[in-house]
Structure formats: structure tokens, C-alpha cells
Length: 174
Image (cartoon, rainbow, N blue to C red; front, side, top):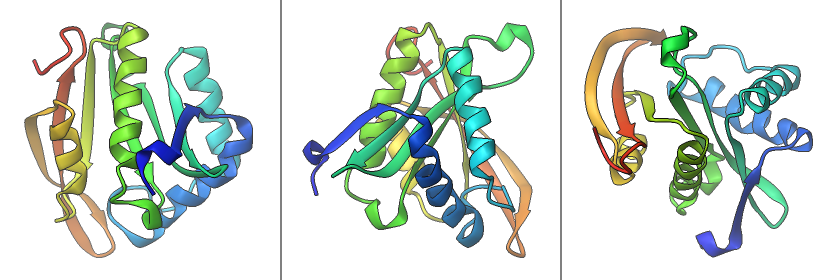
């Protein structure tokens, strides 16, 4: 598979079961997310509706009509002064990782957020020992701005989070 075979488009209600399934595997099998119970399709419907109302992008990558990854931008914090700052989320079905889909999704998400007037994007990455997510973000122009030590506890281990930031107002880092 090459990224030319993948198509990125806005998420739709019909994609939510696939999105829930992709995320459930990360919830159950990894510390990439600090969620401990996989969210329901109803939860994903509320998220889709909330992001559409803001309006912030929620994208899916599909190959051959199958949703194989997703990305969205959500508000960084609820206070009004943070309204131009978002946090990104990118997940690719485990069997589709390493094929360029994460990069494709993040590039499209960055472009959609810049077009929507977002100025700053924050990535909060669980330090799982696997550098893939951080490397993806660095390749897309993010810079490290901090680390929170042992803030998550899941699967009997303490996990740090790495904080990265990308300035969208200039197309580069802060």
C-alpha cells in the first residue's frame, strides 16, 4: 500500500464504528492512550457533532472503502483565551501502521486547522518507549516544549507524556 491508494476525507457518522474499533485496540492493548475503557460509538457521535459545531476537523483515511485511520483537532483547554489552540489526535489501525498514513492524516489535519484559523497545535504523546508518534510530529514541524513525568498509570506502569507544539500562524515552529 502506498499513500496514493489512501483517501483522506471528513469523518461521517457511518465511519464511527470503525473509528471506535481502531481506538479500542489502543485502549485495551497499549499505553498510547490513557483511556482505560473503550468509548462507545455514541461517544464518538457526540465528539463528531461537537467538533463539527466548533468547526474543527475530524478526518478519516480510507483504503479500498475501509477506514484505516483517523485524526481530529479538539480544543486544547475550555477557557476562551485558548480558542485558537487545539490538541491533535491521530490513530492508525495497528495493521496499517508504517505505511505513511499517520503522516498523510497529520498533514491534512494541519492544513485544515490552519484554514480554520487555528494558530497553535499541541501534541500530548504518551512516552511508551516507541518513538513513532514523536518522530511523526517532529517530521511535521512540531518542537518539544515539555515533559510531564509519571502522570499516567496504566497496565501496571507509570507513563510520562511528551508535550510538542506547532505554530500554524507561520507554517513552522514557534
